[in-house]
Length: 306
Image (cartoon, rainbow, N blue to C red; front, side, top):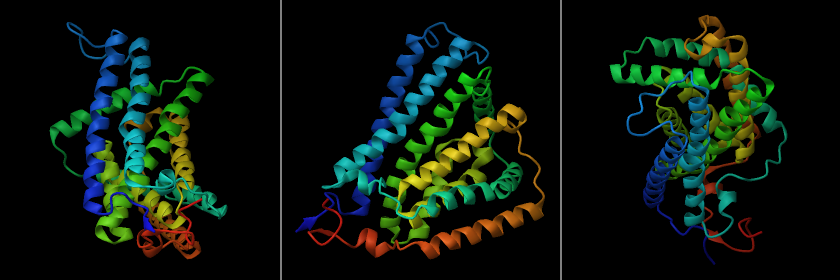
């Protein structure tokens, strides 16, 4: 019998993960530069990016897609291959979810949380931010406005793939499959790992005026993964959340730059329903810290060898 992990210490796992993230960032920088230079968007003598130029926006969309893969998916997959001796993608979260209702509960929980998320966005607007944070937010809004200009059904489908599906897969593998797993292992507490990962999930997006609502969504997704013990409900819920926003922009373009006004009572009802749904998930779950982290040896009596 031997350990299913090559790297047993949570601190060592975190160190390896951070090194792989740094490598992913370097690859992302090289790939993004190559695309922009190759498309004639970046180079000596060229001015700032023109978000009204179709060629520029098309190149930036390629950068967005490639960056999502190289920054999130590849480091997470490399971590799994380095850390686990057997079935690395199983430990990354690609496990069959036996309870079909978990998929539905995950989506319903995110939908029911929308009023609370909107209210948290309003609260976030009253938090004073540094000028560089506000400038960064404005630049990100310009790019997102350019991305979400959709003139045909093909544009809608492409944006759903780029902005909804691809991040749903890559970010869930990265944040829940890897980072949350490490944080729970490090702090020996599921909720400590979920909350810390939710905060880091929000911080990684570098959109500070939406920090609180995105952190809350990260915590919800973390809870869904912990109780469901499978990334598939997460990916579906994350995709659904992103896709709704992409489609909503068609009818309400202002939502990119401003939060809708949400009454406190609506936010309170949303919070109560979300908590009740989370309790239902918890009650139906048979996942626990010992099952995930304390079955250290691989043998014929456990599920690590297919």
